[in-house]
Image (tube, rainbow, N blue to C red; front, side, top):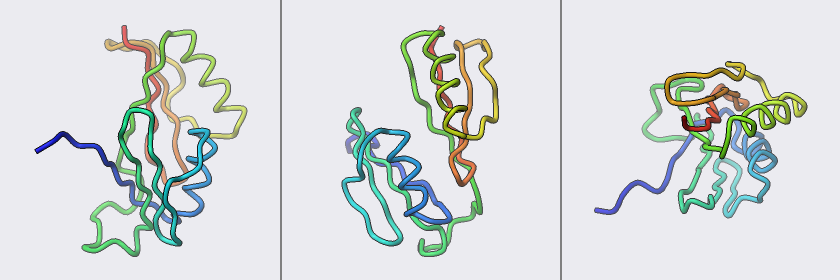
Amino acid sequence: MSGPNFMILYVENAQKSGAFYSTLLGRAPVDASPAFVMFALDSGMRLGLWTRDTVLPAPAVKAGGAEIGIPVGSPAAIDATHAEWKARGIAIAQEPTDMDFGRTFVGLDPDGHRLRVFAPA
């Protein structure tokens, strides 16, 4: 069995979330339908956004519930990315801070999924 290469987030509206991630990632989805949008990431991983009320079996999580880690190269990049996201109006759950593993901040997507940007110590 190969390692995981596909993550699905359950969202309220795949098209709305797709537009958010298209802007955030700076790329168009590789697949889109009314209830599902998929992005191919540079790492080889794929990110799917699936409208929650069309998922079978129904998911137990109603909103949010996932965290995606996004590494950047330096603590300065944390602060620059944070400023850029705030200027875009992305909700911030945690302001830039230094933690045991490095400098980090957390933004939220439209469904409350956490987007942790971090620069490893």
